[in-house]
Image (cartoon, rainbow, N blue to C red; front, side):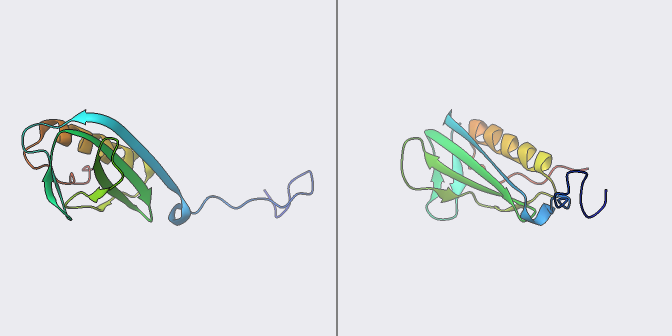
Length: 112
């Protein structure tokens, strides 16, 4: 494609992955014994919500008591994630970690 498409509109360059982003939230996860370890307050457990934001090549993981206002950074966050599907896999691994408990921290990036 040239600088202009057939309708004489300016052609868009491909999306720059450094400016791409995505977000996932999973609510009402009952944590396993020991819950999740946070940077701010240490372990939390109970009915939790996990939120992941993928931006700038990393997955940023936070957790809160479901329905609360305060969010806490999961220990080990951010996790390198070169693309959206990797970040989504990290989010799911964090959800599974919350369910398991044991003071879960951020999962390691998936091996390619």
